[in-house]
Length: 189
Image 1: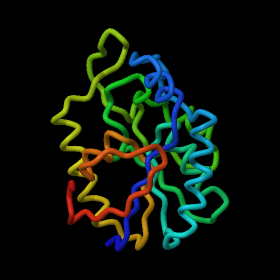
Image 2: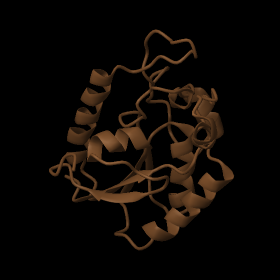
Image 3: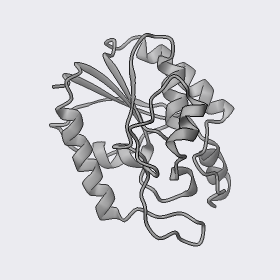
Image 4: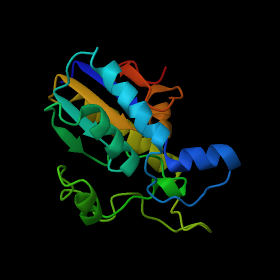
């Protein structure tokens, strides 16, 4: 059972930057990090160095989370497990992922063959082409993740994920590349 769990939100994505400026979904499907997002991840790498060394990094398969995971933990000799259990609440274009084969080509040092295709929420698409995940489905998925991570056998786990997911899980908003020590027994704060 994991004794210490740290939640790390990804760095700023191209979607975050455009949406903050306009309030309109810019249709950046599986949005990557911006230059600022890469710098935020590098700064988080220095913060993580002051924490207990992780046994495992668990990353969402969305590109911005994968880029953040590799910027923080790449070359550190820590295994990175990719799972869609804590993917973002699908509500915007940036939350629609890419097929496992495309991710494997972009991130050849990580494994994606265990993911379904598609691994993100399936449902009818709205006018933007986004299959919005119902709130009750999302809430159930967050609860399932909390149970799964609580029972994970790694001692120290770093979870790289997303703002809406972590807000639902921990009960508060997260800034880009913010790191929070979290306990599954505490629930939302």
